[in-house]
Length: 157
Image (cartoon, rainbow, N blue to C red; front, side, top):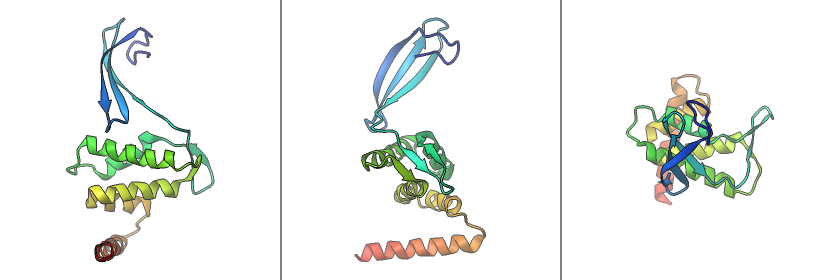
């Protein structure tokens, strides 16, 4: 592992432990050359997933992009970082276990919305406002009304 501070390839692992709901390994490292400390994460990648955008372009699935979008939706909300990491890991597992090598971006967005809906209703609406491209306040009202009706229907079933 190359040191991010001095570029040396001589680093040592000082501590390893399970992270993100046992889906990753967190390693504390120290550079043998400059003494800097840093953390790395190792995750199993079952397959490379290509995301097909609305305009037809393809891009490699980026776990960090999903995580950033969730962090933005949950900014200043009472959801701890470990819960967010678990959400992201769950989304990635669903995508990787689906068997498809190409996934529409809309499917990724829907998985993020489902996860946010279970964790934080405000974050859910925030994410939906960007994902569904709300234009004015009435879009928020319609979305919240529909979400409330869907919740009532789910409760009756």
